[in-house]
Length: 147
Image (tube, rainbow, N blue to C red; front, side):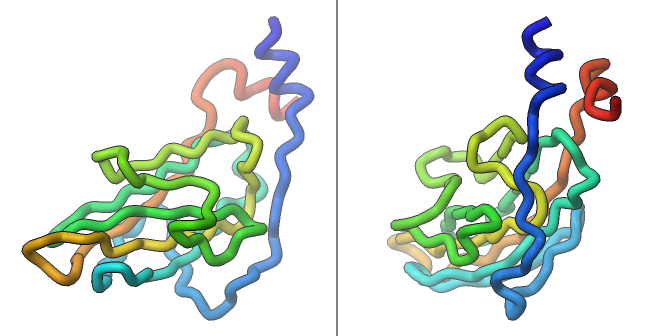
């Protein structure tokens, strides 16, 4: 099939060099609590193992108080901002991002996440929890990757 051929020929880029060693590393499936003032950024990094193969990176921001958006950069963009980022939750309503391995900017290795405190007439800061996970391809086609 066309999809099977695509998966066999898919070469995933990787960025294994940490371009922001000062940032806290968020472990997979671990909630991290944070607070950010409006118009400011809180920054983190994630590491998706090169052994993950074809997967979907899912990032979730749970808002406890105030408003915020998630900005994500791949391994070549270690400081995502509102002006320059690869992916964003801005305008999506839900604060969940799904970044698929077939996205042209997807790379295994480091991802960089900025939580942007956004304007809110009632509160000057945002309290949140952030987590991520890497979901491997869950179909018979995933077996093609290992051959």
